[in-house]
Amino acid sequence: MSSPETLPQQPDYSYEAFAQRDFYIALNERLLKYSPEIHSLVDFATGTGAVIDHLRSHGKLKEPFTAIGVDIDEEGLERARRKFTNLNTLESGSNYVNFINYSVAETPITSSSQELVTYLHAIHLMPDPLATLVEAERILEPRGTILVITGYTKDFAYPPRTEARRQWGLLAKIARDSLKSRAEEIEYVLKQKGEDEKANDLFARGRDPFQNTASDYLDLLAQAGFQYSVPDNHITNMDRDDMRAICSYREFAQGRFPNIPLEYSIPALVEAVDPAFERMETDYFQRGWYLYRAKKKAA
Image (cartoon, rainbow, N blue to C red; front, side, top):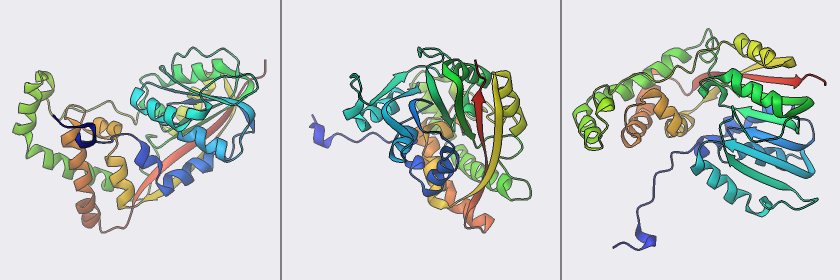
């Protein structure tokens, strides 16, 4: 039997590698610079707590502060807890960071108790984005701030007058063709796991994350009770390493190929990066992002 030191390491399919890319950090900074200086924060879809770490290191969290990260990914939350291990004990007058496993549409957080909600790179993943914004409005104190960012607006994720739609489409096609060449093997693996439904529909489409336009998100913010909503947009250039990082992320791969095991879909996507860049004869893929900041109404 293998000792703990020789056990094979589990693949890291978390968002961490992508979140450390320079362009991604700069993109987040573009939005988070609008954060007021605060003592209380809730980070929706927190992952491993990168946003809380950023706000703390940039002096936006004023002592004593409390920060709560909310997510349904317990693996990511455990990594976040380890990152903030010296701040996870609540003591009077001290700084406190807590990570909780809840849906961002329904949290146990006290109403009108928070100065800031951050909601980065996740609203497009939610089956009911309005419900999550209503929850953010509920927990914010009057005139509290929400900051939102998404790279999945229907009208700007693939920016007009760019090659972005062709670029991302080609990447997916190359990966799909590779997976099709191994379809029998993948079907067998799924059936061995008792997942016959997936095996019989290997290339089923996942939930469409491009359901809302940029103006739709403004409307959702207004419906949730926010005002003074300010949109901003930005186009990023993603190099090969950036693309390999996003292709290694669990939710990205599952969004593209929801019925295919990650041990197949992620290598296929990663291996598609170089040929996609070469066929497009480019040094980068482009992506359009929308950033929003808004206020809860006064009491």
